[in-house]
Image (tube, rainbow, N blue to C red):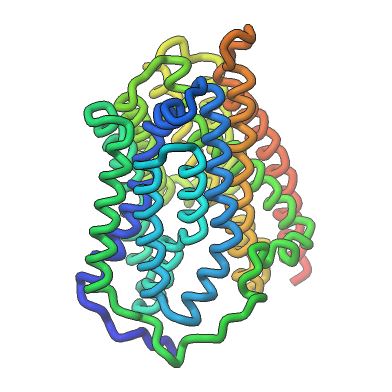
Length: 419
């Protein structure tokens, strides 16, 4: 029988909502201003600055990949409160380091620190699980999802506006101050929700970053969908990795224009993920939904790469690409369908592992490709090259997914015929 922790007051739930919201605001706020900050610090071209940004994203995601399961295990041992508060304090310090950074090395150190302590979203999910019965968790998880989406809409727009009007470092000072204020608020209102009897000893085996990847991946049919999922994620993460650099080099956009374009990405994603998915996917099924999503994303990436004679066209391709929001839930549904009930936890660990690897690997690869095709004086002028590669990757992912799911469907029909 589920026994939730003593119910905290409304201020604790408000704190968790604000924490998730600000985590995405923080992620979004630096995207439109990062190109100019890197150019200011290093004196390099935006092409080379894109490479340096790829290294920063790799450092952040790499540390997050290694440390997330450790932080999760620590939160199961010592509770949610210390982990989420330490994470917030480090996040605020990261922004402060970037705001005052005299060299690129300071940015790198800040990203390592932030990645190593990035546990706000996972700990917020654990908080919801602690205080909510299973049959009511979906509603509260939905609240966190709304905070997630709202943060990515407001963050880039705010970062671009503040950067244009108050200087490239101003958004980082603002983010640091706001997140530190949230840390102070949480210190006074956020209770511990993991009761003593539900805590467990720290075990390094649970802190393995690869989790159940190898176990789950040993099932041939599931391995096929996991492979398609990984390739899709590598393609997808080209967008946050180089979008600001692409828009700056190709269109000469200001920080505000870049921020507004990213906010529009967030709005279209919220419309698809918040409404269309629930209406469309039940009607057409997971497989068709994924393939439609892949087709729209492929078209969108091709548009970014080859058919953007002016900046206004970007919004056309963003709108078309929004249907790519069908991909992730549909693929996760098929993977869950192909996994035994007692291995669902391992599956989620494997998915999280692949997501972290793609978050680290994709920006590093895509930024190098962008730099190669945009470096001044080389005669190479193709800023859309990473998006062209992403279109190819999505197409390959779609073929693998289609062939694998066809086998899963055939196997399911054979098993039903035997009953």
